Amino acid sequence: MKQKILILLFCLNCINISCKKFLDIGVPKDSLVQATVFDSNEIATSALTGIYSSMANNSYASGNSSSITALCGRSADELINFNSAYSQFYENNLTSSNSAITALYGTPYNMIYAANAVIEGLSKSVNVTPSVKGQLEGEALFIRAFNYFYLVNLFGRVPLNLSTDYKVNQNAIRSPIEIIYQQIINDLIASEKLLGDAYITTERIRPNKSVVQSLLSRVYLYLNDWENAEKYASLVISKTNSYNLATLDAVFLKNSSETIWQLMPPANNYNTFEGGMFILTSTPQNVSLNKDFVENAFETNDKRKNSWIKTFTDNTGIYYYPFKYKVKQSTTVTEYSMVVRLAELYLIRSEARAHLNKLSAAISDLDEIRNRAGLPLIKDISPNISQADLILKIQSERRIELFAEWGHRWFDLKRTKTADVVLSTIKPAWESTSVLYPIPDEEINRNRNITQNEGY
Image (cartoon, rainbow, N blue to C red; front, top):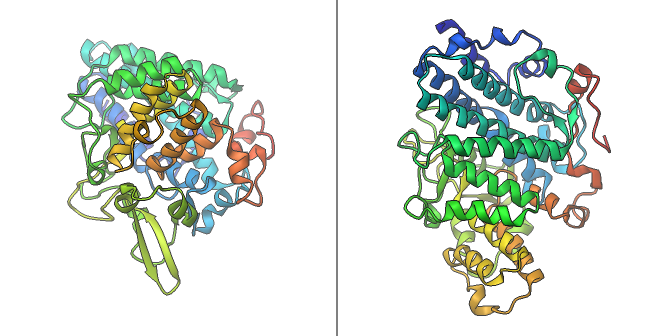
């Protein structure tokens, strides 16, 4: 039994090394996980929490140079690239043989496979107590939904794998986007019913009901379902005993009042990959902030510009870099990697309310963000702002508030259908089809039912 749980955790922690092995999923499902893995609460919990460790330590979710934050920031107009390994993202001339694309596609499926294994193992277990079983199942459903949210937004139609059965998965077809979104919603609604309002530990590192509701709100925003986007954002915002906007310098501290969900550092004496990558102490080797964004996107006296952006100067030039995370490296851990925070919920609700023509309420939400940034309130300077102008103002605030976080800018350009207008003028290789990344060659070669995205 111990050997089996060690096999599962070892596989989760070796994702980058053996991505192909997981993409193939060519072994009997019980070679990784069996019901006997979950013979106790402790073993079942270890299997589940091992997924979070893998997310924090591997590519897309880690905040490192190959993460969604860094890769999508390069694809959009946020980051300048200095690493030749990722130049295709920056230049928007991706090929389907790109190794970073293979990892970006394969790693979420590794997490989905692990979540499916937990769900199946729990269903067969008789020794895991009902309360723990419900908690773990709720988290596993959330993990599956979370990873599919990014897969569908990065690649469009993708296979929908809901079990560990390799005989089914190895020949899966690309499901329609609407079917994938419906499964995401189904998983999140089921998860919401299983998880409580309280975090299961003293830290905000394992999803609770609010984390699920936050992702539901974002999903509905992306689907232009304004009523539900407003509804689920409101459920979280209303929990003022748990969540409040933090001061700008405290937002990204571990377990800050603004935190809804964070990932722990991959090692006990390490802070975040984001801080390690973004903070410059020498000429950039990975990324820096786009100069045009820094100099032209912010309003005068926006406190975020001073608090969240710094410069590094040497004989090669002046470079701007994100300073949301204040620690590059330290054995004293003060910061965790932020995944979901309250400010996003205010912006989601503001946008949803604006589309519903609830303009006063939308302005009120937007002003919560502007007030913290030290900016004039819309209710004072533009009380009669039009619906169209308010929506544009909200989109501008999203660009500033959420820069260099989890690809928000890239996804916003896509969902608002402004990618062509914005990126065609600064990316010579830009094509309308660039809004989706290519399906990796490895996946197409493995499964003849998989087709390539248009333009690749």
